[in-house]
Amino acid sequence: MTITILAFIIALFFAMNIGASGAAASMGVAYGSGAIKKRNIALWISGVGVFLGAIIGGKEVVKTIGSGIIPSSILNVNLVIIILGASAFSLFIANMAGIPLSTSEVTVGSIVGVGIAFHAVFTDKLLIIVMFWLIVPIVAFALAFFANLLIKDIERRFIWLKQKKWTRILTVLVILTGFFEAFSAGMNNVANSVGPLVGAGLLSVDSGTCIGGLFVALGAICLGKRVIETNGKKITNFTLLQGSAVSGLGAMLVISASLLGIPIPQTQVTTCSIIGIGLSEKGCSIFRKSVIEKLLKVWLVSPVFSLVISYSLVKIFLEADPYSISIVLCVFLATLGSVSLMKHTGKWNSQNNRKDKIKYIIRTRKREREPAAWRDFS
Image (cartoon, rainbow, N blue to C red; front, side, top):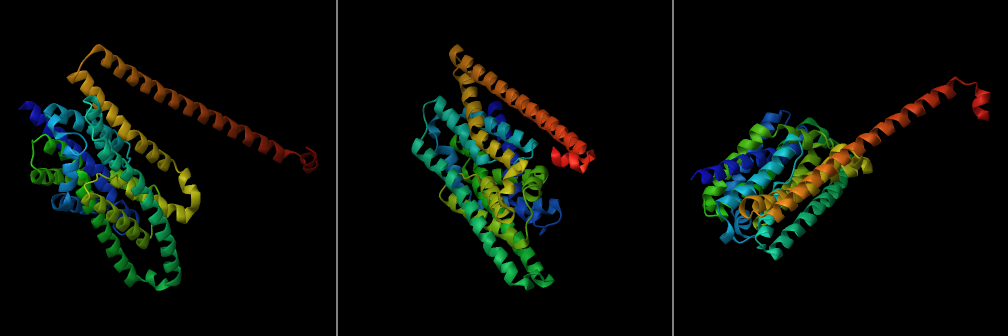
């Protein structure tokens, strides 16, 4: 009984972190475009949208997470705790860094880690999911890029759209599309917290979507401040038409995947749409922003990170043997060493760049103090 209660606590904690990451990011466009000026209002709208999306359309993805990647027959309370614990830990780290991480990636990674430990993974379904992960964000990026070219042409041709009357209409439009995107986040992301519980027979599908949706909504409202700032303000700025395009495209793609029962990286879809808008506005300079680099690194690491954690936990606590524990410890120490080395290398390069810059400034000032004839000669 105590273990079951622990499983539910971890699931609800994970649900709140999902709300803080994916659901909050869904309203980042409306907030960043200025359609909603107060951050708390944007988060409340996000919470309502994600709850409705979960209870209305979240069932198909719950079934996939619960029994579509690994057999539900191997799931028990212990494995549910391992899956949700590995996922929640990965997502919590990302939230503390203010990074909109894909909850679908960390959850699927944790499930696959358990499946590998028991040699029971539905590889055909997994390949389909990974294919969607690769294709859908690229499609979102491309659609947003070309949509923005069209938007810029429309704004240039129809200057009257910037009049106060039409600005109000566009403001309502971007809020509605933001709500639509939050709705899609509820459809797709609630499964990540309650899917393992449903697969293990601890919850029904209907109860899981309702309870999970409620806690995802609470997470968006209470914990989503840093992520909505990252998505809304730190990547690029938007007009109202651009904000509507990003939210509408993201919602359309995520809802389509949800109807097929595919857990999709909803945050990646939204962020790739934002980057597509930024590329058509500012060119390749947007890729030099540190926040973009940080997002890409976390996206690449997150599924592997949660996979390794869940696999290690199974080997240590459920199938303990000296060989497995030794391998896990070696991998952990190697990872820590690699991270430490990368940090040291980064600091070293930063110090060298700073020294080179100081030397350049000193040389430039010396040349400015020299006579013109001597500067020409040198």
